[in-house]
Length: 350
Ligand code: SF4
Figure 1 (cartoon, rainbow, N blue to C red):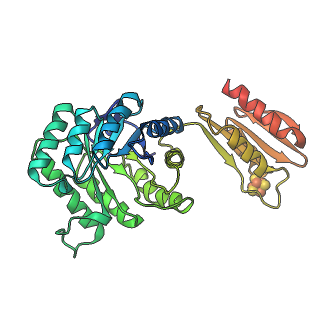
Figure 2 (cartoon, protein in one colour):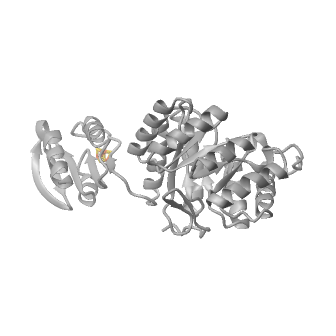
Figure 3 (cartoon, rainbow, N blue to C red):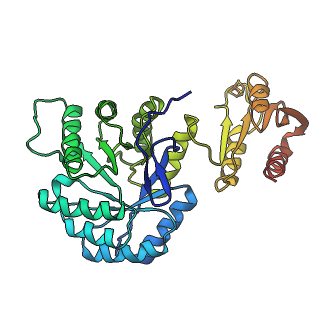
């Protein structure tokens, strides 16, 4: 049982982040934001995959204007990602953005920060203060360990906006190095009660990026740390969302769609476990209903797992036993296993 750390809730569009809210899945569009059509298409795809908040890069004024159009049509809450130019933040706030991601320290001094923070307070727009190990301020004490340098940078940014009366804050401390990231989040969560957005930055391509992200996010989530997550992959953003959901499902933090339990196969395997599991996975890829399906190769662990799942099969010589809701339904010939299993899944789905 995971005891989630209590954080101060904020609202990003219609999504609550922190407090008692479930861990929220985030991703980022990878289109040119100025291409409104392509960006909206990708936001729709992300929504279908289970994304709950989308960040959009705003590199210039043209992108800021395009974001106003995108905001009018997108159903998901949008966060504008802004660096260096405070005027971009003012424009997107004026145009109704749901959240900002910026570092107050890199938008040009207290006066400009004050203008952004005042606008954010007026429209109640939360700001994610995102510290990245690769771009820490030059004057942070270099003798400190990396995680401490990140926390020091974060606290400085937070103190700056707090001094302006702002507290709609979400924080992140991302690094490529997993132990550094874990340590930074652990230290920050002991110091602040703002919601934390978790991520391993620049994690790379799948499968390494998936593994690196999982290695970094899972220990923190298991400790109850983290209110939103993003898996950063050099891959289509849908894969980021799918990975994030699998991490949350594996920790029993969230439920969505199918969970497929299948044995690794071995010398005792008597049916085509790999083929059946792959087919079931593909058929259920877009299924939003929460259900557990077990595909097991023999009588060693098969009946136990198949009984524990909503629907399962346990292989035997040239046949398999089909289970549904913990009950043995029938014995099926090998040639009919897939058809019968899929039919039972359809009945379960209603
Ligand atoms: Fe092997 Fe049976 Fe275990 Fe599958 S369930 S890995 S076939 S022992």
